[in-house]
Image 1 (tube, rainbow, N blue to C red):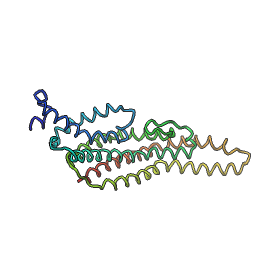
Image 2 (cartoon, rainbow, N blue to C red):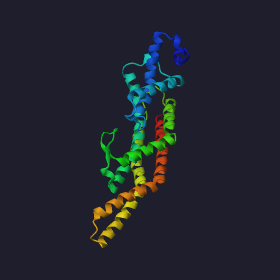
Image 3 (spheres, rainbow, N blue to C red):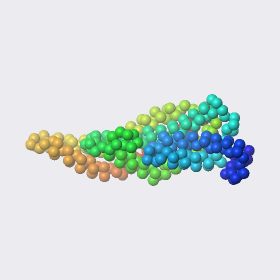
Image 4 (cartoon, rainbow, N blue to C red):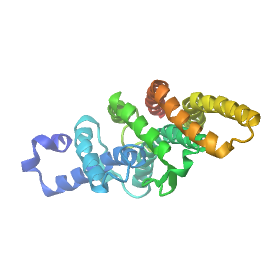
Length: 270
């Protein structure tokens, strides 16, 4: 029905029976985007109220409803409806989890750098995980989010999610399981980028520890902790300042890889 297909132009004249079908279609159209918001590292933060995420999901579902062929809600019942909802949830959650895995490389690098420099004593309770994490890890995570937003990665990710409705329309009950391989590859890239981020700083601190060891060996009266620990912390801040451009470049590459992974995921759904 034309009235159901484009309800935004005929909203005042809708009948009650059509309105119920439209509400069900809107709810179905918001599942994929809503699950992506819940699982992604930026949109799924606890500091963003759940009500806001629900409103944004329904707002985007209005656009989806007018641009995508929606199945007849009245024909979906029982196990068929459950299968459609499960597929929608799986696509959205997988896309968000891929971003979360790749973004974890920033916090992983921060934890390793903090453990090497002794900054792990400065820890705060992470409101997202509920566990105590080093301050440096949270700083690098925020740095990653700033780079992601500055490169419009959030807009690219949302546009790919919206394009997924053309690749796999709403109503499909089967998908390609190639997303399992993408999850494994994302886990490997998480450790790779974590190593690339922390490598310059860890190598510099290792060389500094060698120098401190030689100095304390040649002058045994010097206390290793009172002499080496302050120098190590000061040198760590200096290395973080010097390597900020390199870290930002790695975060830029990580943003491109994250968007590419979501694109590969959507292409592999067929």
